[in-house]
Length: 102
Image (cartoon, rainbow, N blue to C red; front, side):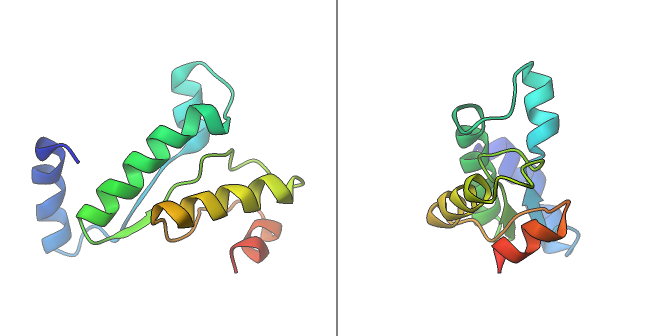
């Protein structure tokens, strides 16, 4: 993690104001002007996971769209990838996604 970012996050962690870091896949993709895909999202997801681990907080970052509701295979693949990178879970927008996390 970049030292400047670490300096900014550490006070929040010490004051118990920061419990987790998350990647907003749809917002990030929109900012990049591209559709959410593993190719686009793996690097930022890994960066969020590393930053969260460096601050000893939870990491919620998947390399796939949070809007994947019917494609449970892609959602589970994203979860498996994130866990292998050190992630803790994911943000969900539908009950089907919650079942996949547990």
